[in-house]
Every structure is written in C-alpha cells, then in structure tokens.
Length: 246
Image (cartoon, rainbow, N blue to C red):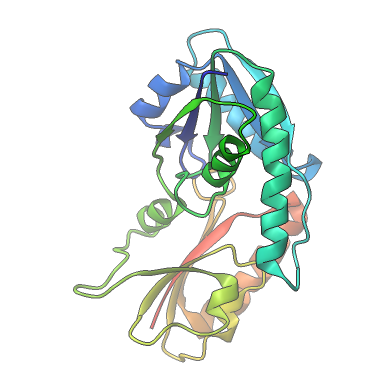
C-alpha cells in the first residue's frame, strides 16, 4: 500500500459525509473495515451502505477483526497500550498485503476519541511497511448533539470541557460549568452533585434509532438510565453522548 486515507464520515447520518470525504473515498482502491463482532455488525453495515451511496468506481473491502480487550481493567492505560499493540500487528498484516490506495472510514472525526491515527503511527514505527497517510476531518458527535438539541455548546466567555464518564465521576473541574461527556458506560451523570444541573443526552445520533432527552438532571436522569439500558439490550450496543451544565 502506497497511501492510506483516514476519513471521518460523521456521527451516523449518511448526509454528514462531506464533499471532501466523498472525493477521498473515490481515490481509494481498498477499504479496511474494522469489525467488533456480531453485536456491532450494524456499524459495519452502515459503513458499507455509505460506500454504496457515494462510490462511483470499483473498490474492494478488507475486513479487520478488532482484537478484544478488557473493558473493566484495573490498569486502564496498560490494557489500552497492549490493545493498541495488538491492533497495530493486525493492521500491519492487512496493509502489507495491499497495493495502491487504502482507506479507513472513521465515525465522527479521527482526532476525537478514536485510536485509528495512533494505530497507524504504531504501524509505521514498527518499520516493516511504509506509506503516506492523509486525514480527512468529519462531523463529530459533539457537533451532531448540539445540532439535534439546537443548543450552543459553551456559555459566553466560558470554556467547554470534553471528558469521559470515568473522569466525570471525580466531578467537574473547578471553573468548568459545561462539559461534553463521551464513553460513559456507567451513567456517571448520576454522580454529579449539582442539584441545578441540566443535561442534553443523545444516543445513535444521526441514525434512524436516534433518541434525545434533555432537561433538569435530577428530573430526567432516571429516564435516561432506563432508556439507555433498554436500547442497549435491544440492539446489543449503544453509542451515546451528552452535555451537562451547572
């Protein structure tokens, strides 16, 4: 493979794929599609449907099965580092078997809570394969959340904090009144002590099953917990995000 395109494709709505992304996709000879097992096959199907809609040239798909990892580790950093190493080995093998231009479609934007660029750098650092790569930005789930709820992310003159559910359990940092929270598998918003806090929550943004809930945190938190559990049980997976504000 002589070149790799890492293409952001938005939060889920096929119409969020940018013109730049479509142009990049139509330069690719082969797409590396990363699967996470049967329960998330729908995400793979969505990627292939985006290709079917936007491609006007012949292409091939190479499946990559994502190595498993411990989702509740005691050593989070160490487990993720090991996982990235195993991913790099798998990616390297697939990249080495291809000629021409390859591409990876990334949900949202490759720069935000996605490990693809880190894995690509690890592959290159191993020194067994060499290629150029280009990053195409995409619409993030943060932008999609704000658009669907019709809100401005930050208050005037105030910062916006982007964090994870694990970090939110420690509370919002001093001086931060608004936070976007991603990767929260434990509904950490229920631990926020601020009685007057508000929340804007969304799941499956841009997809047909999109669900939005907003309001005073103490008034809607139980509903979000219940709905989130029901959705995950029904589909086998969930992608959600929320904004919380003191």
